[in-house]
Length: 149
Image (cartoon, rainbow, N blue to C red; front, side, top):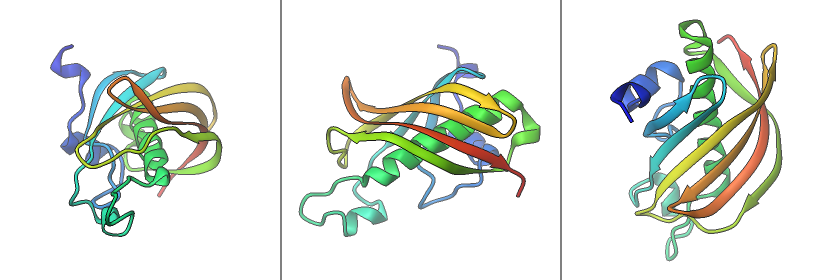
C-alpha cells in the first residue's frame, strides 16, 4: 500500500470537525472513494471513558465503537465528495442491526471497516464492522445526513 492510500490524523482533523476526546479514528489505512474505508483506532487506557466504564474491567462503550464507524464513514464521504465537503456535519439518522460481539479493551487496535451501501442527495447509508485482529467485535448498519455547519 502506498502512502497516498493512507490518511493521517492531521488530515483527518481537516476533514471532519471532531476533536479529542471524541475523535475516534487515528488513521485511515485503506480506502476507495465512494466504496469503502478502513480506519484504525488505537485503544489506550488513558481515554476518559475508561475511568467509569468500567474501573476494574475497562471496556470501550459500544456507542463509541459505533461513533468510530460513523467518523470513518464521514471521512469516506469527504474523500468521495472532495474539499467542498470538509468540515460539514454528519448526523445519524438511523442505527440498525447493531451487534456487540466481543469487548474492546485498552491495548487493542480497533480496525473499523465501513462500506457505502447507497447515497441519495445528502443521505448516505453504510455498513460497518469493528474488528480486533480477525475477531469481529461490533457491527451495524446506519444512515447519516450531511449538513452545512
